[in-house]
Structure formats: C-alpha cells, structure tokens
Length: 391
Ligand code: ATP
Ligand code: MG
Image 1 (cartoon, rainbow, N blue to C red):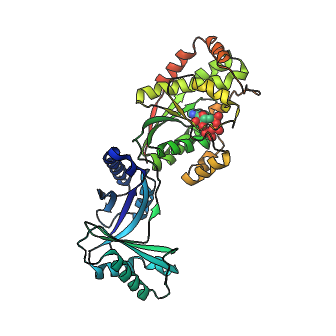
Image 2: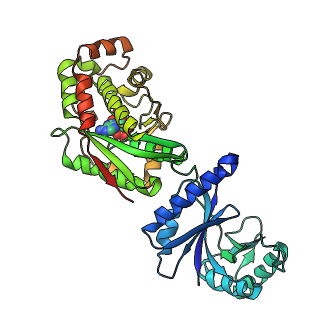
Image 3: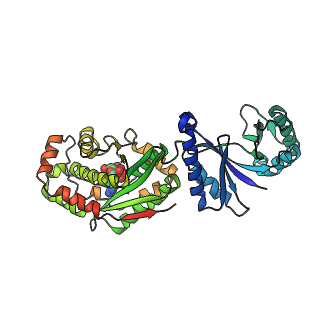
C-alpha cells in the first residue's frame, strides 16, 4: 500500500500576499529536512503540502517525525493513497486502518470531496464508508461527537487519501520567514528553549557560544555542540560560532569592580555577538534570560545589558518560571543534555555579591577604566571559528 504525508499550514493562511512565499519556503524546508531520510517528492495543491516517497524504501516513521517538527505546519497526517473508486477506498480503509480500529471502541468517518467529479457527495461517502467499517469491525460503535478515532477520507485532484485523523504539527511560522538572529547558546536549560521559541516565530538561527579555556573544558564545548545538534530537527542545519573568550573575560576580572563583573561581562558578550551578527546579517540577539532568575537578570541589570549594543535582544523566556522552561526543554528533547554538569564561562569568576541594581553610569565608568576591552573583543570575534552542525 502506498503511503504519503499530508501537511496543512497554519497561521500562514492569515498572511495574505505573503502566503505564496511562505508556502514555497515551507516546501523547500520539507525537501531539505526529508533529504536525509530518503527520496521524497514534495508538492502542494489546494494549500496542502504532500510528501510522497518515491518508492517503498523510505522510513515513513522517521519522515513523519521530521515533518512534525517543521514550523509552519499546523496539522499533519499519514495517509494511504488509492484510486478514486469507492470499492478501492473501502478496501484500503479496512486494511490500512486495521491496527488502529482493532484497538478502538468508537469512531466516526469524515469525508471531504474537493474533486467534485467523484460520483458520491461527502455525506454519502462518509455514510457508506462508515457502514463498511462497521461490518468489517463489528465491535466498533459510531460516536459523531467524541470519537476515539476520526477516520478521514479525502477525494482530491490526484487521488483519494485515507487516514486515521490529523495530528498536531509544530505550529508557528516557517523558519527564515521572519529573518535571522543569533542565539546566545550556553550549556543550560534556558537558552536552547529560547532558540526553539524564536525559531518557531520564523527566525533562522545562528548560535554563538562563549568558551574560556582552560577555565571551561572541551567537554563543556562538546555539550553545547550536542545541544545545537538537538535543536536542528526544529531549526534545520546550524552555524555555531564558538568565541574564544578567555582574554576579554580575564581582562574584566582584573580591571573592574567585582560586584559589577557579571553585567560587564554580559555587555561584552553582547558586543561580540553584535559583531558576528553584522557579519551574518542577523538582525537580533536571542538569550534565555528570565526576569529576576539571577542577579544579572534584574530589570536594571537587563537595561544595562541592552544598552551595550544596537540590536534588539529577544528574551522569549522572560516571563516564564523555571518549571515552565524545563517543561518545554523536555518536550523539545534538550533537557537531558542541558543537565549534564559542565561549567559555563558565565559561572566562572562570579563575585559572591553581584550588584542587582547597577546603574548605566557606574557601568560606563567601569568600562572607561578598561581602555583595551573593545580591542580584545574585536580580536575574539575575529578569531572565532565557525562550526557547522547538521541535522
Ligand atoms: P541557561 O540555562 O540558558 O544557561 P541561565 O539561567 O543559566 O541560562 P545565565 O547563565 O545567566 O542564565 O545566562 C543567561 C543567558 O545568557 C543564557 O540563557 C544564554 O542565552 C546566555 N549565555 C550564558 N552563558 C553563555 C555562553 N557561555 N555562551 C553564550 N551565551 C551564554
Ligand atoms: Mg547558564
């Protein structure tokens, strides 16, 4: 039996003129994401996207999982394809849905006929197919309001499709339709979640990670690369910049008041991220900060951080508590890696009593007393190697 994946777009339908662009981005994304699973033909008709395996050698479980993580898709289903002939449709439904229907008690049939040349209308088709399934599986009962399984039959241009209902897709907007941003990726729980959330709003991401060897280890760096890899089912392939941050960080430690160290370091990191953004034509910086979670995330500290450079800083976790962020990190598959206990450069040299209410004036005064800082930052940005992380 031939199987196919049908995907329906979500919010894009609202976007009027942009819709055609969004749909073609979505199709490109589907092609790219499926290319490492096997050979698929991807096309669209009547605002449904089709992913059709070219022969029987494709892993449909893997393909379905891939498509379910593509932003911009609201619902998807895995369907059997057959001829537009009621007898064939009936046989297909009885066979294809055998496992599902044997394990269920109630069902209904929803029929949709966009090819109006098909001789039965949707009502007749639904009724007849329902009767056929009841006689094949006599333990079943019809429940039109709250069925356990919604058998769907769709008569479309190319063929008829039979499936056991629609699954929720990843939602959001296709990656890249909102532009590009740099995700400040640490090894923690929050920043991968922040990246996922902004990719869901249509941003394509580059990742920027700050490492301070020998204070931070190779294993800590590898952990971050693993997190980036775990984001790729959602984001697609990623460019990861690992900034050699030791010199600027030691310089700040040696030349600034200890209680301002963290905010000064965060401003310095953002300035370096800004340089990389300009190279990559990225228009914003994303962090995993959450209001008041730590001393550097109070309103005043965030204000000082924001003032360091000219790109908007997006903080999708800002209003979430740790439980909520952790919940998402479980869902997207980054949690287990995030909790591995490796050091992060943000947690080395941290003072025992960081100032929670720094003012921009005192921060700028502290920076004025560090004449070499900007040059060290520029050098760090220049020496930053790029690594490619593929899905
Ligand atoms: P996370 O769980 O994401 O590590 P956190 O609660 O530990 O966040 P901080 O360590 O204060 O908070 O970092 C706040 C944000 O700064 C992170 O979410 C991340 O976006 C960024 N960040 C922290 N450390 C690094 C790093 N080494 N490289 C890049 N970005 C970093
Ligand atoms: Mg952290």
